[in-house]
Length: 311
Image (cartoon, rainbow, N blue to C red; front, side, top):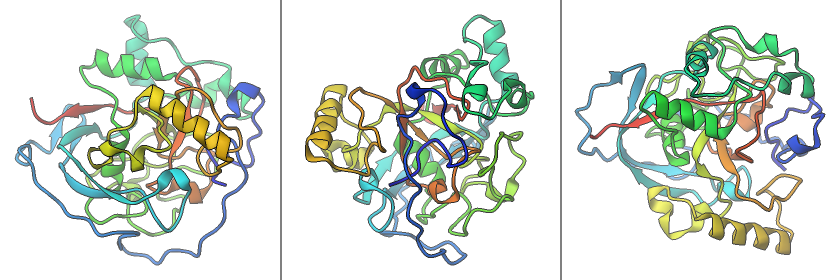
């Protein structure tokens, strides 16, 4: 069963924070270095935004096209099947939103300050360890992540957009390729976050930093365990909350594993992507899916913003 948002060394003190905890995942053989598609091949399709500027307002362009989302040969049930998804070009913040940036939103009384108790509750405190200006903001819930993005005239990325930004056109297993993560690539297996953009070897195919490691990143979508088998899968659309609740009921009734961790859920939760500072290397994979109730303010969860490339 996949490790979710908590690494083995970090025991979670609050029962409310155990939703995605689980046992350590199985170990696959190391992947050879280089960029080799992990499942099906990909086909890049240019769209009307192909001539858009590559960098705007601290954001980098992610070109639209068709790519393979999910995996068939590794991971868990909610990562399957691998399937082709077509999305439009969009911009994505080059880095995770920092404490410095988010602090301006708090000062403007648009956003709520990070939860000062989450770090201690998760045995990685005190909170001050996570509050340097250039560290990624964390301990904020989904609604405040969305509020910040709207305040700066942006939005949260969808799950399909995030995976597109990580995998590119070559189906890479990690943002930098298929080479197993090292501490030079990303922040993982640690007890604290680090300043954003301090691991340039880990940049993604379009230049983004920290697409895996440091903090999990809130997504616009609900977490839908059956998303990849729905009619809207080809465009990255997830089910409605009602459809998701029906899927969760089906998972519980059938006793399925590999979808919701060790604690089956019964509410519509929000998706997160990208691994975190306290995470195991195996879970840094580009297809790994995680979820939490949107109200959770976890020290391992932050975000970055997106924006449409077309008017």
